[in-house]
Length: 412
Image 1 (tube, rainbow, N blue to C red):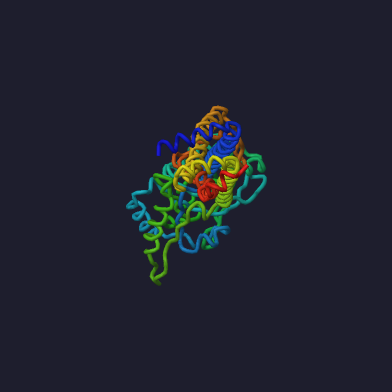
Image 2 (cartoon, helix red, strand yellow; image 1 turned 90 degrees about the vertical axis):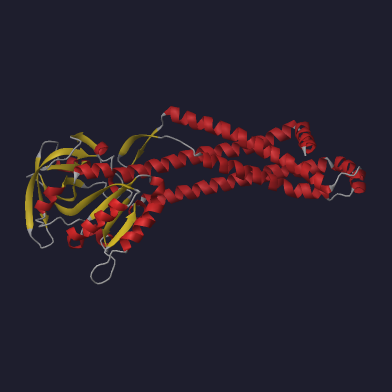
């Protein structure tokens, strides 16, 4: 087998220009896939992080049927205290859960004593909310990065439209589920940067203020946002929690809660799926480049070396050995292209990170792109390249091994 490798390498070096061109095409394909995969994957993860860690959470749990009517923020479909107590117990037992935050979502009228407009609000426990969505304080572009009773965090677009600033006093008027109207004064403690997606333009008040404003005798929870210890375990934990949550029934025997992941709630999930599809498409292009380039080289090699093939066949070289010669040549081209492509690709990814490339996403600006590639992706690309390189050589190798020695030696 060692001699086969030596002969294969010698044959590749005999045609340096053609070998270099083929190896370059394979290398460029690997580089392109690694760089694209790393940048697209990092961009996707950063966007997911901006959405989940600043407003949505990784998972959300609602009373059954709430999400279908979420646009109207139906207060009559909130969880009762007893239901939330059951849910809280389940969440504490789930090992994959890092934090959770109950929210009271409602609509109201926002007045600066001169103008009035509508507003969507979240009543939150600041400590629990900031643990569940840790990037929320970073969205506070002016004012205090906290929330106390009597304070309100106002979205930037509303603050600009109503001409209010930090420290101003405003009034929120809301109607509870019984139709009773109540108003309460708040001090603007911070202005929130708006973000793309559901909840990206909501305001925030303290949990106790929401209960008082809506005249609730006991807290009635609209949703519970959940943060996981590991985002990579999202599907596993969601499946486990969904089974546990589905087991909770109301007196009529129907499910009491429903669980949704961020993908079910955010329109960006479709963009993330498109990025995944584009990555697959790029990998298919890599396979095509490797397949065509190496097959072309090996076919040309067979035609140019017909007399050589006839000579080694005539001296008793088995067809399997002849096939091995060409297969090893393809293997060497694939290995060389994969190794060199990986090295250059990693260097380019490092350069991208050192360049500190910034971009904007919705209302958010100054986000820094941090490209990264998982070792598993590098290994997968390398294996694909090597396998395709060998497969591309298979047809020319079989053709060479089936040549009749006499006909090959006659070839001019």
